[in-house]
Image (cartoon, rainbow, N blue to C red; front, top):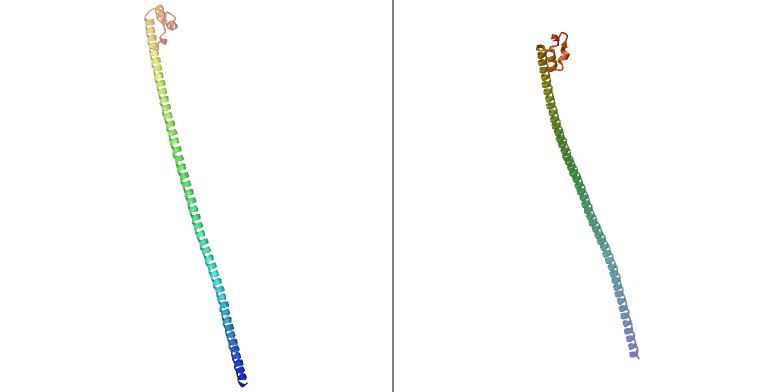
Length: 200
């Protein structure tokens, strides 16, 4: 009887110890689970933070890359604008130089044409002057010849007149009248020549 009671006590004690150990084990497991859950939560939190930081860094990198690309595009656009401006300036300078060249060429051409026109006018003027000089020379020669002929004619007429008068003075009235037609007009009364008509 006593052994039974002692055994029961021992069995109860063992059961209580087992329950206590089980309780402690459960509590320990619960604590470990809580710690594990806490670590999991912290890990998830850290992971989220890491992901957030990574995304933020990636966003910053993306924004930085976009800014770099935009700056590069702006630089290239500026280079293109500068090249276009240089090309336009070069084209304008070439047009101005061509215009100046064409203007000079036009001036040279006009100068040549004017010089040629002046030379042509001078040649025509010299030709006309020579022609006029030749015509004037011919006229002068003709006038001189006419003058010489008139002088010779006058001399001949004068010589004939003198000869006629001399003959009329020395001969008869009839003979004088037959040698010159002008002697009759010189005859005045008495069948003699008036001395006032002789102008030899």
